[in-house]
Image 1 (cartoon, rainbow, N blue to C red):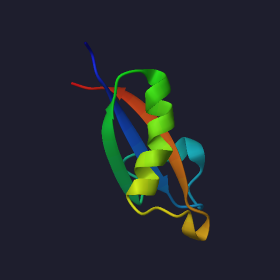
Image 2 (cartoon, rainbow, N blue to C red):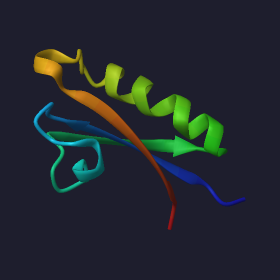
Image 3 (cartoon, one colour):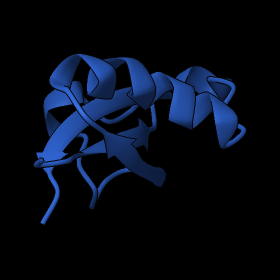
Image 4 (cartoon, rainbow, N blue to C red):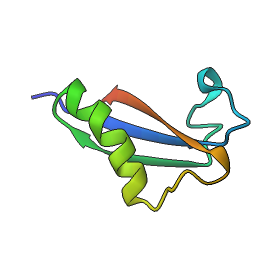
Length: 68
């Protein structure tokens, strides 16, 4: 079974959503998922569990990548 990697990018409010990437994020949190639906749900959960509280307008962008 192919596994999906959940990538939660925590980006500053000054970074536009299309520009939010692993390189521009303030923090990157990853975890496993088995389906795309699970991945999309887990992104914000991973960020919250890492201590992210949305300070200063920062936001979470979730990416789903094929685990290699």
